[in-house]
Length: 240
Image (cartoon, rainbow, N blue to C red; front, side, top):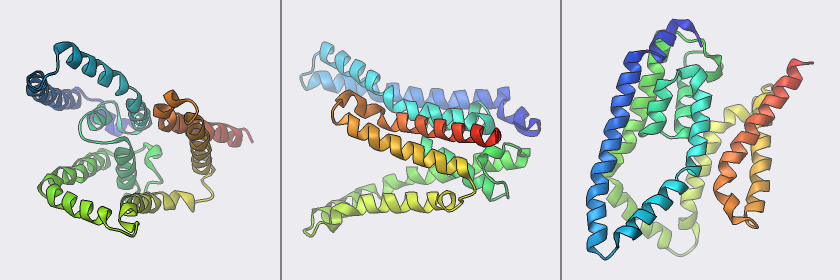
């Protein structure tokens, strides 16, 4: 990490601000949990049932957190300890933060987020882009009801196309963002990561049909295998 901006990315001020935002989000969770707990007792759940549900939810939330931890480790060398911690703990997502931070960096002429040789103003721009970009998702609450009604109507129509709109939109978005890396055949590490994660995902997905307990780990493990593939290729190329 460039020392020119590490005094910001790893500063105590950023630590305090990030911690305050995370504590605020945790307090909100508690405030929502209390009336939910009371309502559960009112509709007939026992305290034992509620505690059992909370425990099972806590256990099953660990597995989906693995990709988030991996994304934090990826962002850590470039963005410091605290900003990725804040983003991935509150409103951000693993895919969004990595993608948007990389887009902000490349717009300044850098090859990728892995360059990690930014000036303080570029680091500030990354923070602003990540923050302002995700704010629009919170605005969807004003249109979500009408949007949901329209999507429900479209998906219920005969013909089958309505049910395919969601997957088509998602695949189109992912194709748009991944295309620059797919056509860059000189970036062998990226191709290795893509192939490694794709092959491992297919194999793990097939294995999860036989071993159901593996299903929750497929995505996280495929990411790990992808990174291992990129590391192996990078070491092989470095030794040549």
